[in-house]
Image (cartoon, rainbow, N blue to C red; front, side, top):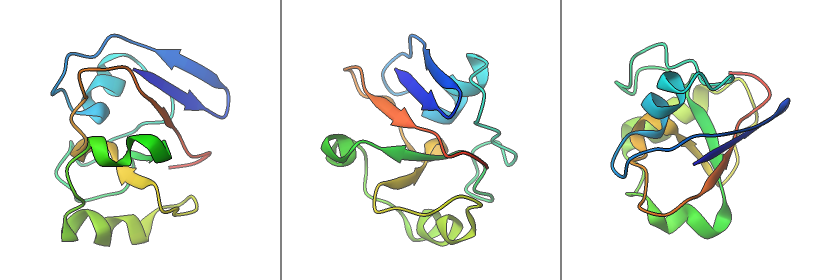
Amino acid sequence: MTYRGPDGETTIDVPPGTRLMQAAIDGDVDGIIGECGGNVMCATCHVYVGASDVDVFPPMSADEDEMLTCTKAERRTTSRLSCQLPAPAHDITVELPEDQ
């Protein structure tokens, strides 16, 4: 799993099914805060998923969609909350916004 941020990339091993937010916190990835602990109550784990990986993840819930209206950084069509994204079995890259 690669997290691409404004200051570079961090690649860590993430077991399939692990939430991308938790993996980032456990792996000391700069740029993921996760203030609410993965309860869809904030937008401090905002990421941009690659266009080719959008369908790898479960559909966005109404709660996630609502929280994404509160992001500090630009919301894009590929914006997701990493607390809602289980790691797939294959490697992917997500982009981190400049600010959470």
